[in-house]
Image (cartoon, rainbow, N blue to C red; front, top):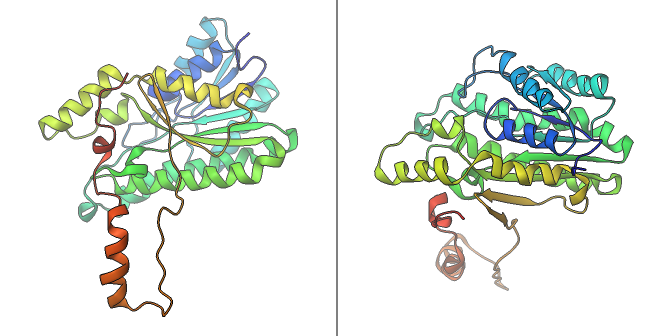
Length: 305
């Protein structure tokens, strides 16, 4: 028996990349799967197609599994409700949601348009809110449910040209944390994964120098979507019923538990502070503990296992 035997799982962005691998693995592990994908371009903004999600659902059924397809957008609250209803109508239940659906609109912040900002926030942050909010009461009532959401090291650490993406992805971290805290008494779990994996989104990253070319090449050849799916499916399953509110990184065959903001150093002054003494005293004392402005590659600087 697989770790998801008898469970129903909804996977958003399930037609390609990480989402597709999550849908296939969830089915292999015994789940009945609703494969959702708008079928649109990685940059968003188009009408999409029902075909890609159905192709993955057909692949699951051909392997002996049970699957249905859905082409609604995570940005549509009515569409998200339809996903939940489809799971209930088709398979009489819903126990976990794995939601890697996303788009990119990379550009330097000073060149970013309002549309670049709005589209990325809408799909990633609003989309995560929509999918979680539509399912939360069902999960609470059945005293079981797991959300597996997706963040990014672009938010956790930083990458130039991704202010919109980073802001959305850090918002998802906060959303997941509160869902986990509020869901504790009802066995509702929420965790986030920052994935390193080749995908359509990664393929859109501009390659402007040898360093970025090497980074993309490593992701294409050494960090695969199916490796990320192993962690996502495990977090969706009852085998990790005691894991909630955590931030993970999946990188090749490596899994990292990431820190969450906690005080690292403090300083006080009995007579109080002025702007000048803060600059000359407090900042000088705290500076050795500052986090440098390095990008993701400055933190994960070694080849993955």
